Length: 188
Picture (cartoon, rainbow, N blue to C red):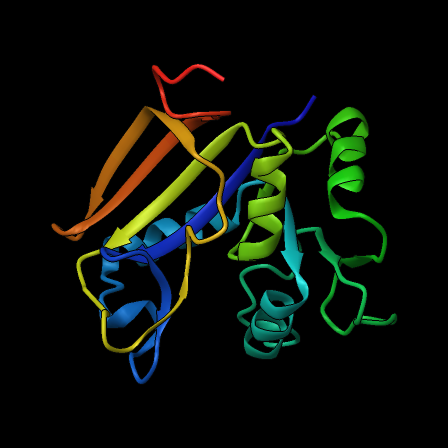
């Protein structure tokens, strides 16, 4: 059974992006960019929602240096239609949670979300996430931040399994998540 990793990048105050800021908040140094290249070469299947698919395929799809050209990608959307332009991309229009539950039973490759906040929330809520990876960028985007990452999430306990520092200030944190029914010590 393949593992499913939720993979997110965030500002210190928990935003996925910020208005007017450059990509990676202008902090993507050489160590982190090299890691992204290595990471793109791993053999996994990337799971995307429609918004992330549109953004990523517009940026990378069909370009000669597309780091994800050879990786299989599955997009969950009720609004996109086939054929999809980005190479090696499959469209699933049905229930994402049920589709991923089936993938975890039948798929051979590890599964990983890329951004896709709504998809990640629903998969975590359903108890399908094996690893939760966050790269924290050392910026606070309180005035310009958009897409608060953790809004709508259930309460989750996280057990740290690995960590790494890139370029002296970016923090990669990987956790095993446990969705909680109630805060610890509170009976229901």
